[in-house]
Image (tube, rainbow, N blue to C red; front, side, top):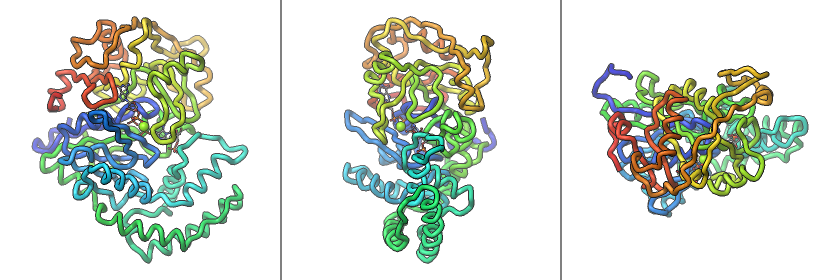
Length: 444
Ligand code: GDP
Ligand code: IMO
Ligand code: MG
């Protein structure tokens, strides 16, 4: 922990420890009772973060979870790729639900902008014969990050610069239309129409835009606490995930620093979110996947359908080797286990405790997607509790088998379980007293 400046605010990164949809949105919402700033650091509107407050449901895509508490400041960091139309639509629906967004929601002037040709290229590429189909969310995320790294992207500051915007769109459309037509036979996009639409969006976006790195570092210096809201998950990270079946950003905790401009030395704690089982949406390796009726049953009980695309999520048992890997890559000190209630009906719960390749145990996670085909999962059957947990609010009140399940996860991962979620609502949360104390949380 950085003790350099004792008066600076506390910080914690919330990171998905699996393939996304672990329940990060709900957990960020619980933490914002105490933390005063929430900053998104990666991804775009491929994310879908569900928060349920007293039965009322919000699905946030670009706007950080902090927006649901009016006293909280929310920041869309420079590491995010922002589709201005999607952002404004989300803001409009939040306003319609009487959620305050003015003066408490900020967008980085350095965030990259998603434009329609990003979606055009992605659609073409996903459907092109001979290309690996990733099963993306079709939001233009990958091509927008490609342009960022290719140093030909448009940043939010440039979007607000009308003459620059016009030149950028004209040049980019010429190039992208040529490429998309040659490679995928796509119909060309109209640069004039695009300019008019995005110049109008820029005017609406302008009041939200500022130098968010400055805002965040000032907030820290004033003693305010910040939670960095991860999107996607460790196994979807561009470097550390199941490449190429990943997203195009640094979803892991390292991304919190580069994606916001808050230095790594100012990050105190990393909190990994994991379901009590496992899911993924889209293509790619999934060692513990259940393909038959058991998988279908888990999908139904867990309501495992994508918050953004509605696609059915693939389901499987908890994968401890992957959780250990996520712990190593992110530096996870606390785990939050969500959706415990989805396992309430089981008398026995298989958990993957190790991988074997050619009969030999290995701790290594394959670098190649095809490497996963060689993995044999070693399972251990844990006792189920076969009783409802949705209304339980303390660890002591959990059934003994559920406590043993948590203790086993702690033993196998070396991280402590700080919070357990037993239902989608804000209130359906169990906090460990040591977690409350270390993070300075207000207990519910
Ligand atoms: P995120 O992307 O990580 O924020 O997760 P999503 O919101 O995409 O998916 C998590 C889903 O599980 C949402 O529908 C949540 O409302 C729901 N959820 C979160 N925690 C729990 C829980 O403890 N139990 C149950 N049954 N549902 C939960
Ligand atoms: P949250 O933040 C689950 C998956 C897509 C696809 C791959 C690449 O809600 O956890 P992309 O559109 O990013 O290029 O798609 O990544 N994916 C997610 N899966 N949760 C998400 O976000 C995801 N964001 C992207 O399904 O397999
Ligand atoms: Mg989600």
